Length: 195
Image 1 (tube, helix red, strand yellow):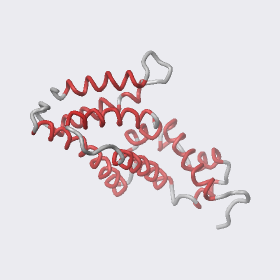
Image 2 (tube, rainbow, N blue to C red; image 1 turned 180 degrees about the vertical axis):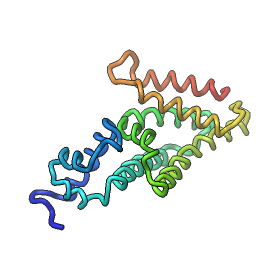
Image 3 (cartoon, rainbow, N blue to C red; image 1 turned 135 degrees about the horizontal axis):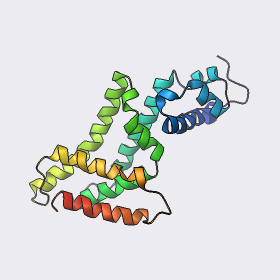
Image 4 (cartoon, rainbow, N blue to C red; image 1 turned 90 degrees about the vertical axis):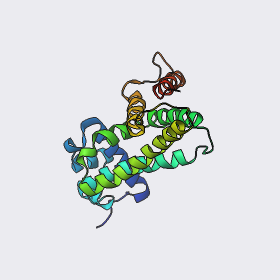
């Protein structure tokens, strides 16, 4: 299929993903058509298929990119820490990373139901890999007598839900700075695990 005059894959491909991200976050995956994405990008609807096989693949690519970036960014953090230090690092990292990506976070949580079974499984594996990092920190803390957690899996889910909730209400220029929010949340997380 011929490419639209003036179209460049290294420019148009990212524009397609950016448009899909914004539209999915604003209207929801089911309500957005490939025609709307094409209009936003400024290409013919048929031209989108030069960049993605279908809308499902586009959703999966957005989620996969978000989760892969999350895991890669976590891997860059210091590994040799006490459980308490590791928990603080995880808490602050989660808030900072997600506060910079509100649309990606919204889609990663709200649009899981729209993934095909195969794509859902792949994203769930990535989510589990991230959650397992926090659960391991909590288990080590319990083993060392630093944390008091009755169920490490449940505590993991509760902490992640609490931290991700910041994205629903935090706005730059509000009553609290992001650094203040991080500190308050770190205190709440620390107390919630009995440290």
